[in-house]
Length: 97
Image 1: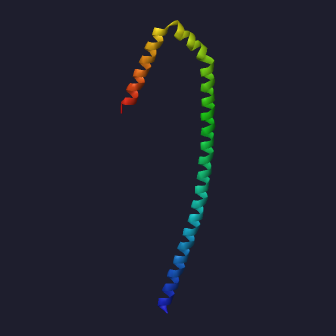
Image 2: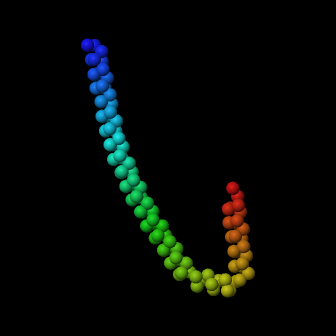
Image 3: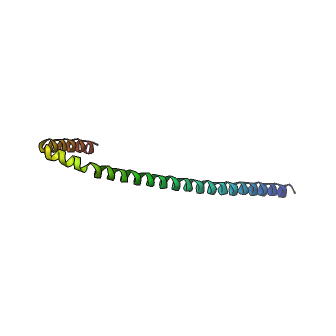
């Protein structure tokens, strides 16, 4: 009879472990669902912020295009030299790895 008692105890232990595993998996599924929801909200906020920045940059550019045109027409050589310098700096930054 001792053999059967040990088997029952092992079966109960196995059933308890299975129940613990099942409850852990349920908790993991809930946590994953919360994580996905939080990431979705954060991504939505980031998209809204990027859209607002894009709109702001477009408005700033539209507002200042006239000033830039008059500056370039007034000093074309300086404008060319400045743009060449900026291009050289950006080229050095992007080519440097």
